[in-house]
Image 1 (cartoon, rainbow, N blue to C red):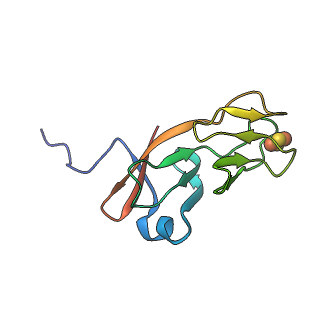
Image 2: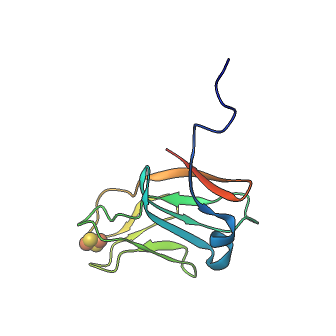
Length: 109
Ligand code: FES
């Protein structure tokens, strides 16, 4: 076919250098909406979520020590799988598949 060979399945949301610098990468305006990727290029599996809290929409922060996402607004907590671990949120964070492609961090819906 005449389809270009570039990946059309995923969205590049940032660079590997940005991810490796802090172990996380937040892109609040990606084509698929806000995305927070956690990990580094050394990890076999990257964690990727939409960091918009399901309670009232604040942006959750990754807590590396506790390995969970914590909302600064009313204290909701979510696990790496996006599932709620603490009130007042009742619905999970949306999760994505993420991987490294060349110099880019690519997220799939
Ligand atoms: Fe996140 Fe309320 S907006 S806990």
